[in-house]
Length: 134
Image (tube, rainbow, N blue to C red; front, side):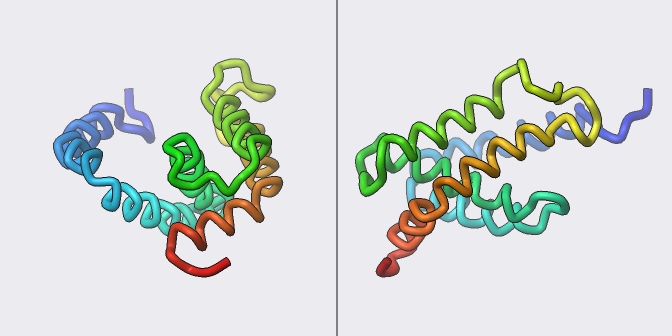
């Protein structure tokens, strides 16, 4: 059956990058650079790229909070971000992900709310991470 998505090709791409990914995991500064690059790449995704671009920043903030390298953020903000990520990965969505195009609309709405709610903290974290004064 012909589909728009070639699972075997995607699997090959992911498996081909495992060694590089494993190497990156032992270099936190390289992971930070990867997250920054992902933020920029996601900004170019049509229909939601600007929203999606802040997801790696949100994940980096959560990791930094958990690792206690950045704690200048409230527990409520961290909990809001984690809650949005939990919704993103759970199976019982308001709109099932299996519905083409609109199936991810509720995920984007939840992420959008969380990112907007946490925007000041995300900006402060980004400034701290990038070495700028807030």
